[in-house]
Length: 200
Image (cartoon, rainbow, N blue to C red; front, top):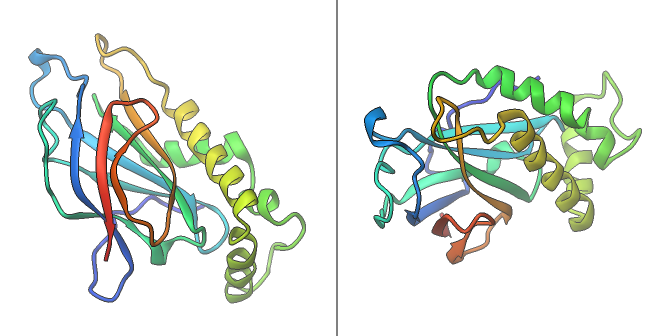
């Protein structure tokens, strides 16, 4: 099982960058202090297992303000899929990201069987598994279906909670962000976050 990692930017990697971003409702009550917003990037890892990258967004502290971080949000060299989802959450209290990954696996099972039934068996060499995953995830219909299931599993595992309680607050989801694509002023599915994404 993959452990979530914080992506480290290196010059030779293909990245998707947040050029600008605005959150309309940050869903953090005043007495709690500053918001703690994270982005959960979900996709298919190079080994065919669910892959999460957790990115902290410390500059998102107030609602309605346009921020221009020029920060990398997706490191595509870590994903076999040509699509990922990006979900935004405001965290309250501690979150065990290992628990989140376990919940993801419990919710959708072995993702390799979803995209390539019987193709990748236990003991398949990593290079061969990566090659097979690259082939099957390039088929957009299968890839989009699996990536959507991943996002649903994250939502189910995290739970939305109430902003009046000490729960994690769901902000928004950007489904099927495609590798190499430029998105100008894209509005999330929850119509709460708007951002422009560029490629580097």
